[in-house]
Image (cartoon, rainbow, N blue to C red; front, top):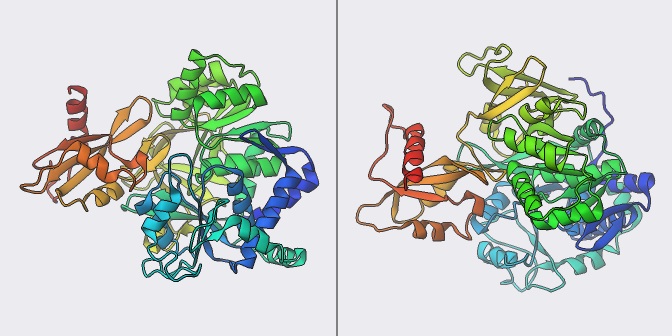
Amino acid sequence: MPEWFEKRTIGSLPDEAVGKFGNREALFFKGRRWDFAQIAGDVNRAAKGLISLGIQPGEKVGLWVPNRPEFIHLFFSLAKIGAVVVPINTFFRSSDAAYVLKQANCSTLITVDRSGPIDYFDMVNEMIHTIGRSGGKEISDPDFPNLTRVIVVSDDEFEGTYSWPAVLSQGAEISDDALRRRSEAVDPDETVFIMYTSGTTGFPKGVMHCHNVIRNITDRASRMGITQLDVILMFLPLFHTFGLHEGPLMSMLTGAREVLTERFDPKECLALIEQERVTSISGFDTHLKDLLAHLDESPKDVSSLRTGLAAAGMSSSTPIARKVNEVLCSGMLSAYGMSEIGVGARLSFLTSTKEQRCEASGFPSPGYEIKVIDPANGAEQPTGTPGEIFVRGYMVMQGYYNMPEDTMQAIDNEGWLHTGDMGIMREDGHLRFMGRIKEMLKTGGENVDPMEVEGYLLNHPAIRQVAIVGYPDERLSEVGVAFIQPEPGQLITEADVTRYCKGKIASFKIPRHVIFVQDYPMTGSGKIQKVKLKEQALNLIRNS
């Protein structure tokens, strides 16, 4: 596909924003405000600090930091010096985070001491047993052969790690010219971040993207009419493609002000919409349902809202989308995307009908080709006939990091990404996303791979076999049900299963229901028939 867009680098955006938007307010967080010049200055100081530590172009850096200004500084500064950012899900616990650090070959981990009740540094000590034992700050741990340093964003110092204030102080010795040379050497076609998303093999996959996400977000901003007069409320996690694209990146590219929250709290979000005159929000069904419920209980002035993005197309999403457009934001747009192809491969227009914005999943965005294929024979389906969604274009991922076989299975020889999603192409040119052909669960907007959780539970000495299927949930859309076959003579309860998972894997991955079985319905080839397990779950849980 011809490249008819200007290639730029993500690390250059803060300095460009200063030239365009100067002292306009860029960020609001917990009562504090920053303009674009202040953000750019913080990014440059962070970049110099990271250079002073010896972080080289192409090094993978794990960023395990909750929503806060430092995440923004670190993301742009790492991109500016040519490092590869590996955002780590802040709902992950020690087992999940350790897998990402090792699979991505991270040389550096940047984290916080704690956030609310979560002690991140305690989990770091649990993962990396050799921290502080050598008396120095360099990490040498056989379990993490590539990891050389840990940086803690905190005013306190922790043995065996680099404190963030000390890194910033050390970076003052790096000249502006040295930083400029490092920034100018960054290749926009090289990988800039690896976003981990669960796949179907039982392990999270690292989705690689280069700097062309700039074009993707610029095109979406144009369709949504986002300008420097807009105010974006960002309660989505910045480690997620949705939050990162629609928050910090959208703000830097358009001059829109970002109102950032540390986590999603519907009461706080509604108060901020009224206080800050927010014009744009984006979220999954779970967030939107909670906002609507709290708005009914405690009305706020949300008249400033004019647009935003939500998923639509699935039958369960239509009532929510309609109520959002009627009560919360009359210009809410529908969109279809995923980590592998970006947020808005399909996107409705501000001028689209309410039906198109609430019951379809958008019209093609520039630079994308999308078709619906019969999974049985590979033929393109006629309009109105469901099949698997295929996507091709400049935003298709570079591949899964260190997973060549998975990459080959996902992207065919003609460059089409096989999404594993089911959809219909409508007469009006809009796509309707219907659900997943794969067995992936979607819990509160987060992808959950059943095989990954099954693999973790099989480590429990009392569990012989486990199979996880989805069960509909009014608030979270879908939750996991674990069908567990205990080891002979072993006693295990549902509470035991929950305790085994808590603090080790992300909370959204923990099965909400546990059913103990003696055997499973099997296919002739010896595979568990999960379709029948789903039927059992519906009958057993509803009648319990």
